[in-house]
Image 1 (cartoon, one colour):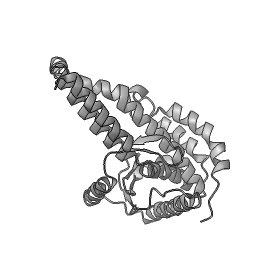
Image 2 (tube, one colour; image 1 turned 120 degrees about the vertical axis):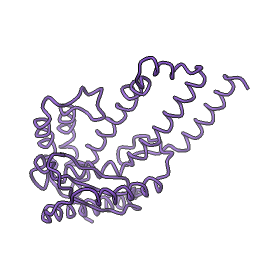
Image 3 (cartoon, helix red, strand yellow; image 1 turned 30 degrees about the horizontal axis):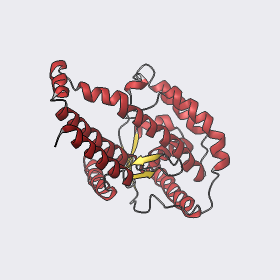
Image 4 (cartoon, one colour; image 1 turned 90 degrees about the horizontal axis):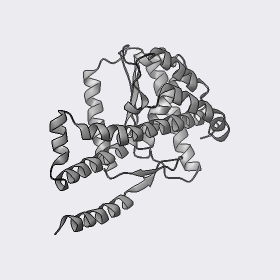
Length: 274
């Protein structure tokens, strides 16, 4: 079989596979590609979460941890109610929600693993300042899980890696040669700048938007969201990489979009009655 015919078969096969694996993100209806089983990723995330709990120092600030759990429960209920009342498939129906507070003042961050495994670092509390700020951060992280962003990223990575290997084979190893000559993963770097980073920034922006919706549905004041990013911008002053090199939108772009969204979200997604 010649190369051209092989590639044409591969193209047809991949297109069929991709089409069958396309879904849409909840609420935004952005088209998504998901070829990694969600159950597999959730199981892996749960195992990693347990390791993190055993290795990291858990905070003894029970008051803040209880606040985190209370916010989480309100969001769980609001998300359930929204999708049920809208007669939509609930993307969190198989989640096993869990919340931890990690004692690390140097890390101003929080994250949510697939399946609803959430961690907040004590360092982010200097940025959130209050309950509405904490809800905004948690809403953003929960949004990543609800929109299945991890599954989407893993699926894209599989396709990118497979595509790169095929191109290397059919170019007679020219991609590998470029990497050897430059002494770095040039192809991977170009892929990150041109494909992966813009895609990740799109997910981050989507998580900002969905997170504000979930916070609003849960009864929190989303006008605090822009204040968080103004404070974060001050904390990171002079430390942010150029946006095209980053997996996250710049603080300026986030603030601009959040200001554009706020009033409409308050009107369109008022606190939900569960």
